[in-house]
Length: 170
Image (cartoon, rainbow, N blue to C red; front, side, top):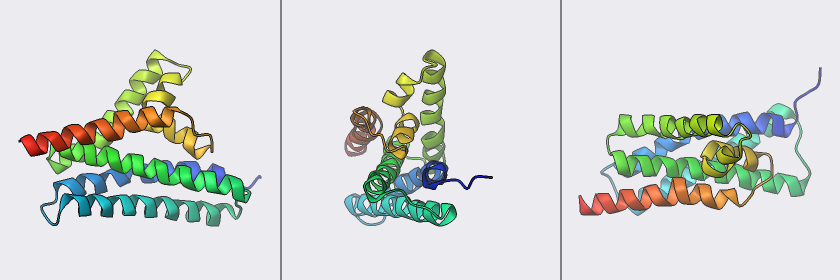
């Protein structure tokens, strides 16, 4: 029986963490306490900390680590996966405002889009370019692509800008 290597453990650990991390984004933007910018910074720090904890867990469980140059790419990829997940949460929280619905949206919307795009394009190109999940798989494989910019724009920037505008206008 072969012992799983670092990446074999890292990917499922980070993907599992990325399901829960968006909830912190929802809580950050729907909480009435402190300034929004401080809450967002705290949520981003928590997401990065969760990513690093996931890296440590993968190293402990696998008993291995990749060469230093690969480790840096995988750590950065892990942090980016969690920051994107957290930004999905802040976007949902700003747009929906009701915590339970926003939290559900952080799971249902991205995974629903992933399923639909996967059905439309079985090769997975659309999923890699247009969904956090597809992009996370590339980041956690240590193969970031230009799709990262597209995913950040669609899932992080646009929802958060629209949500902030509706909060200010509303």
